[in-house]
Length: 234
Image 1 (tube, helix red, strand yellow):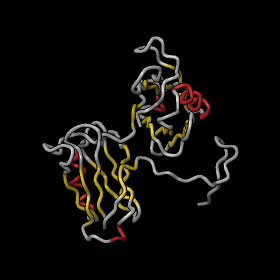
Image 2 (tube, one colour):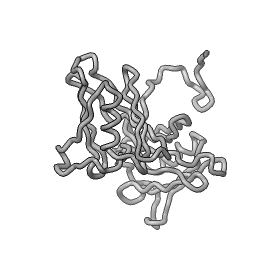
Image 3 (cartoon, rainbow, N blue to C red):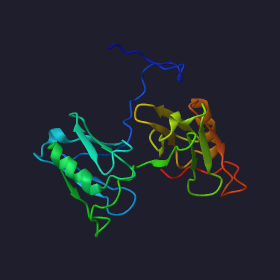
């Protein structure tokens, strides 16, 4: 293969930007250990290296959607990333633990720190995902607070962009800024915001500017929504 910088969306792309992994929920430390705490009950888990070694520190644990596989998980280890494919509507923590064990680099166990009765039956809820597109590739996002709700719709009508996750994250955005990127391979629209400063109006404008989706304020639950509310759910 050959590779080249893509200036289609970013006309000033000079290649200096960091490549931020999508769906990173934890990074190993202390000889290859990490605790993964997810939204919901009965789904927190921990991983530990089968052979504890500092060489297994700084390993990213990445959750990737694979809709339709049912209560299953596909676990792969690349040497720098432990990737876990799962079905957000069906995969339980118990299944993920079994597949981590089967892969062999790490051992998975339930974590009871925040959930003493954790039995592993809870679904794996992806960190940062606030909506998934359906119908004609549209979704409603309702962050906490007033003047924050908005909708997104595919710029090209049709179901081609169904089952796209919308994830709100706080990585590098500062001030009233939103950095919007679309990963067609993973199937995720990532909206990087500053929870102390980014408004819904800014998010709507930057989603429009990215071009894959159009965005608009949603007044369904908040009739006076003017978009001035902060996007703080990250």
